[in-house]
Length: 55
Image (cartoon, rainbow, N blue to C red):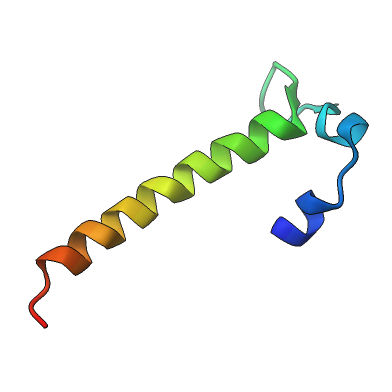
């Protein structure tokens, strides 16, 4: 995913799309940001679990 996003121009980042079943249009940036924030939650969860696990 990062490989694709890294190559986007500013115009493509700003491109609006409408996901199936949704009324509003969202930019590629907004969708990528949402995905990154979601993955950050998983990373934080893994860090907490690693800190609690015995060596």
